[in-house]
Image (cartoon, rainbow, N blue to C red; front, side, top):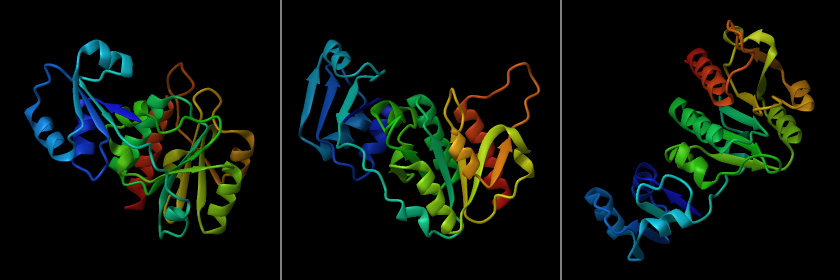
Length: 231
């Protein structure tokens, strides 16, 4: 997998992540990154901008790292954890929304993120870049069946809070204890079965003319309300 950009490169170079190869622009002159990179790998190739643009369509800022594919965590990471706060993404498709949510989860101290394997965005280079490397610090769990996973979490003491237009104001819900917050997809919200499986539905009041928020914005509002209540 290729990752790119100075901020993400710094995060990876300061961790124990394997760096398979680095592609740098011929005039690359960030001495801080160069010093760290030379300590981590000898496999460095200087190329022109056209070659960097061929490798990725992202804004690479003159640096691309080839790293191992992302490793997902197991459900056991959060299943029996005391007072855990988990975020479930119900078939989110936009990598930029996903990356933004990961960054929010890391900042808020969320214990894990659960995503389905099918019809959902994976952890890609775009997601990693948008999260500014936060994907390395939050366990991300990829599962086969969302509703089966929700049932398993509930059997292990979790309360499940969905997000939808028709429910209880998000700031009137008790998020203490083991809690899952479900964020629906950009176009369709939560699926019918997932919504039925929720213990509570949290609603963010809308006072303008539009009737919904961006998924990552909605996630941030509810996540931080949960953090506030839990503290």
